[in-house]
Image (cartoon, rainbow, N blue to C red):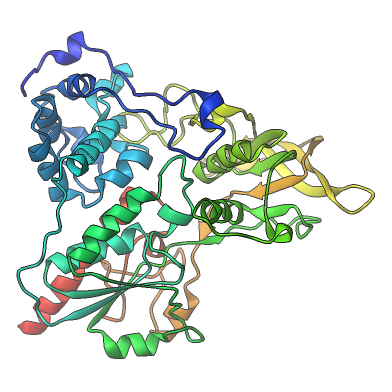
Length: 479
């Protein structure tokens, strides 16, 4: 390490966010950047800790100490090259990753973890600005054709890896543009869509074919059997976009929507798509209730504030998480039960926990005007096991004219399971080997459709893993 004692003299410094009064008026990215000198100083804080738990915690196995040292020394091209050896899209996770690496940093024990995520983003941006990110045209093609079904992070990662291995890759995407939840789920104020577009230009220049607006299904533009006939291998990366529903009284009233309905529509509006007034979902002038305390709910908070909500309330059925230490997941494990306060929460939001939604309330005209909720306790059985939800009888009505359900996602994938006779695991996901191979040896699965809804960084890692599985599959055929 170039400066092994910098962590003793330099404090953690984050770039922070644009002023709240400014950022809630637009959909520009909220996060600011540090000056180059400050960024290099932050990278110098990576200490010679002996065991780099950051590397262990990263699903992609990024070599944090190596590229931090190169950033500190101003060797940006070399830093990007080291980062790119394990990570094809650092510009994505540099913006939206929860930074499992930072939670496992030795300095996290003192709440002074190295700013790895921000340093990653800065390295990627510097690489683009300096022209270091160039198409890598494969030197040969092996004659094998692979179809990727789904253009989200897992599909893009699998396509990138397979293309560099010499396969001819075609990505099929049902939506009008590539990106999956990167494009249609994550708001522009967290991930500007030009970041996706410039990477797609690179991937296309490298030889990957993208086909948008193509539904792969028995009743779609291409059937699974057609896909099976035309390609030597198939990688399923359709994600997990089926939202969990809330089956309570008046659920179907106008004004109650799934979170993605709001987020997808707003992202399309930002891209220039026009909607009829009757179809437009908007929080303008309304009391908004968001049911679900995760990242999707947080994105709804930020979007509602930008649309001009009168008030925003976010509730969660689980108890309030710990704020400082997570006794269930101590360092260096990722602290899953810590309270997460995002830039969106800081823009204006009332948050409540241990509230179970009983019903939606209508006014005399049949319009949504509130939601009845009940305080619950979570009691752990005497013999251990998962806590049980116990109603307290303490009820109240939260006013709302717009309610958004942000309670997570499931992934049925019935059309592929049935068409290819794929086996499922105990959780209902597509059953696969360690490298993503399904019960049909020429079909692989990666990302959320394989594991259930998870992080973008895990989807990218899963896509690269499935690509390796494809390579090993064809290697065995040659023997």
